[in-house]
Amino acid sequence: MTDFREQLLRIMDRKTHWAWPAFSTGLVAKNKLHLHLEQEFATYVRDFPLFVGRAFVQCPVAEVRRELAENLYEEETGGLVAGKPHPELFLDYPRGLGMDLSRFGTVPLLPAAQRYRDLLDALTEKHGWEVATCAVTIFIEGSANERAELDPNTPRSKRDPLAHPLVKYYGLPPSHLRLSRAHDEVEGSHRLSAWHIVTQHIAPAAQPAVLAGMEQALTAWLAYRDDVAQACGLTR
Image (cartoon, rainbow, N blue to C red):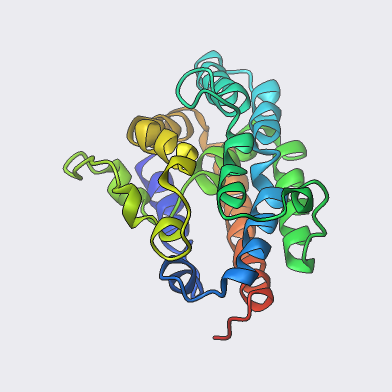
């Protein structure tokens, strides 16, 4: 299982994109920022509870189902931490920035965004619970910081809301960071739980398919982020 975890971590180490520093340091023009938020919402945020639900209904392992059920309940209702469904709380960002929320009702996906979304649908519907669970709990929810999340020596401190890029560079009122605060509250234990279920319950026979799906997800995600960066006026 250690080798499998390391292979997963090596994939997640590469979940970084050249354009992210521009988004996190205020270099994207404010009148383009809505494109980023719209694509994120329509590609995976809006339907993330659906992705979790697909993994849940396919899974025969009770312990894994319980973890997925808790994740699904929080994402769909906010009943454990956030107080509202997470997709609804995501809309606090564009609302606080004065964006036209009607744009988020029907979002035309960029070509690579559509391919990424199509892949997420395939990974969560057509390749078994192991691929679906790993795609959802490790790839979509995870980041390039997974090694630090698994390190017990990493300090767990809440982020300063005034340092959030949308607050610092774009004037988002800190009161509109409810989703970020909810993520901060559960992030440490949530990541540990995700890694526990995939490394303890995915049998060796299923691991090659999981790793292949993760590689596909990474490739599609990078292309998706390329499209978003270009739409926001960024060049490499």
